[in-house]
Image 1 (cartoon, rainbow, N blue to C red):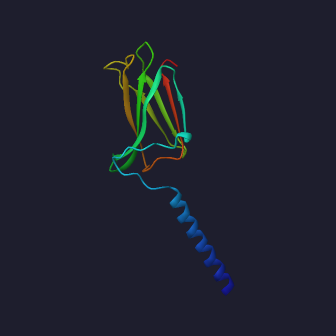
Image 2 (spheres, one colour):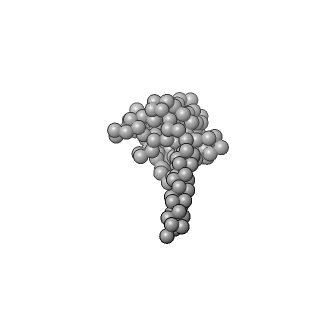
Image 3 (cartoon, rainbow, N blue to C red):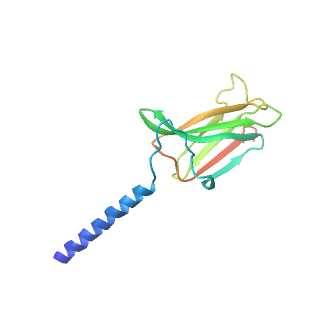
Length: 142
């Protein structure tokens, strides 16, 4: 019986140590309001329409629905010779995804050639950046 208790204690200690290592690997939580890279450059996969140029892709923690939440800052420059509207999709390694349109509404017009437009996308229930990200930008005509 004592041998069984020692084995259970040993396995309990190993489990606690493994949990501590996993928590340590998650990295420090970014400070609210401080802009930081969304993931390592090698862990960001992009597919951007030829009519767009990525001017900014960064992350920041801001208050949203009462808690600090990850927000993606996306800015796109229209490098074509026609006004454009873009569809943005951001896929995270944990299965979450966010996205939308730039410009969100067309009442003020589309993104004119040479101009830059941006939007901020919040990700519910996330308080730090993911390990990897896939960013897709398409024009609405594609």
